[in-house]
Length: 195
Ligand code: SF4
Image (cartoon, rainbow, N blue to C red; front, side):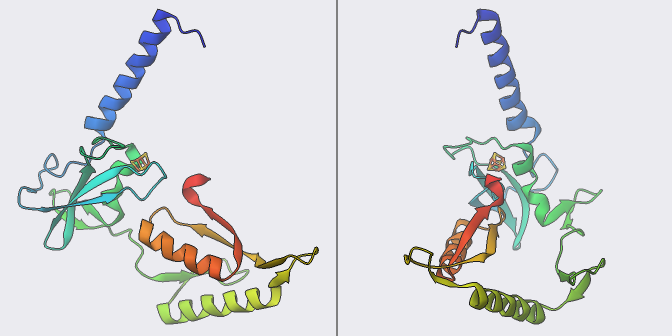
């Protein structure tokens, strides 16, 4: 590809501007928000949103995350985060108008269930939800399990269940999900970060 001097300057200008915004404008810096983090414990983690895997530092005080920002020592993002990663703190906490850290009221803490053909969601307890999920997985798997395919090749699979991973799971959780899903013979596996 031939790039003129003018388009090269334009491209590098855009790239520099984007990197600067990511580094300064969108970083969720707790100190900048007026939260005293000088005594907070720094815990490093990985952004849960996409497969780029940017490094994040979480500031933890009294078992609460009071801030989060890009990890400058991380080789992938070198301290910058995109707008999605910068909002990771808000999954659990937000700043109120006084600048205090409070639990995000939109955080879902109860299981919501929408029955087949129903239009409304209803609150159910965890025991019921987990038992119901296990029951449905077993019924579906048992009734659709294929030991061999049409050519007599051993496949031990079900094509009736699909699994979609969540980008808010940790690597360790995803590892365990993979173990469980593949042990069940599920072969339709995908992840929201890839879609
Ligand atoms: S969502 Fe943004 S910050 Fe998070 S890993 Fe992807 S690019 Fe990095």
